[in-house]
Length: 72
Image (tube, rainbow, N blue to C red; front, top):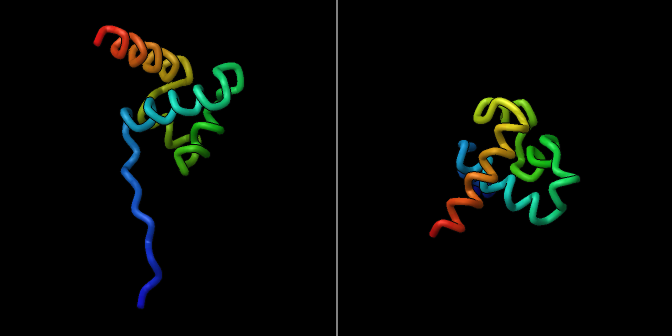
């Protein structure tokens, strides 16, 4: 019998932002880094930049998400 393989959702802008919000909630925004985000998403830091160009874009996306939730 082959070993069980773990399937994970492909990385996307949405998944990066969802993970970023979860990580910031867990550790605080002051300790938030791209390396920690990549680790939480089980990927490499450079892969994050394929979906969002820099940390500022990630933080902006996080703020947009929070405002969307408030608007609902």
